[in-house]
Image (tube, rainbow, N blue to C red; front, side, top):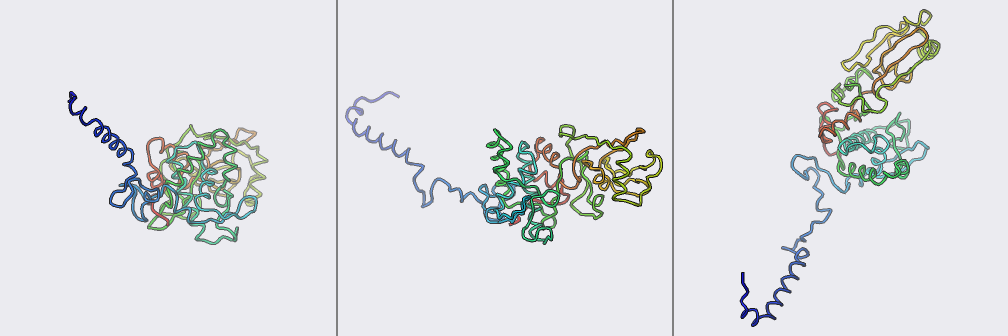
Length: 348
């Protein structure tokens, strides 16, 4: 559009003044108050009230971790000290200790939820093993835990990236846990499965509705997914008789092990050894195998145990969770897959 020189000449000062006022208004607009409310949303305003979702189809979670910061955990460390930590700080140390920080964030979120749920169960039950604490940092008893400074020293140059990932995983699942019939579950987890997880009844003899066998997608990408344990006949005999003195291992070693009963994933449900029937888990413990998914072979001088996977096999597989996350599954999908019939919801 062409300029009108008369208008410009006659009202130059007025036009310039108006332009300056308009420019100032544009810069100041974000700070203006509309009907008494600030244009910028405060961080705490973004936290949805309990029971409401931050977005359609997702579970409620505080991005700042306010719910977890309002809870405390009494932790007995492996060094024998009792620490009182916020739930968020404690869970950071559990996730860092229990799952590789290089994993997908959705897998880390699933681990945070499982660990939070497991912690609640421990807090609601009494344990004679550590009466002055809610939980301990020994993975053979409760859950592993590592202090942030120790984890960051271990990660080296990746410490900033990995620490932030776990921060996000814990905060994004703030207060969330795994529930069955509205109650927190025994959210058991382990490293890697041999194609399928294991029904709790196979390992501990008790059936649990949400701890059923399901397919698990990890495989040879898992470090040490397939391992071997080699023992001579005398080692097998001494280890067996120390725990099961009724076993008869006097004959040919090739006859010591009988035919194994196996589940759909190839794991050993039970196997005769010297006339005594043991569970796959008992044999795993006896010979320090990484899992109960194993085969045995005698070559005339030694036994070879070929083992697949790592852990007791019940509940959530951590490497399976990572494989699901890589395929696009969210943390809720992962948890409800591994814990049959369960749902993800607020614990507090």
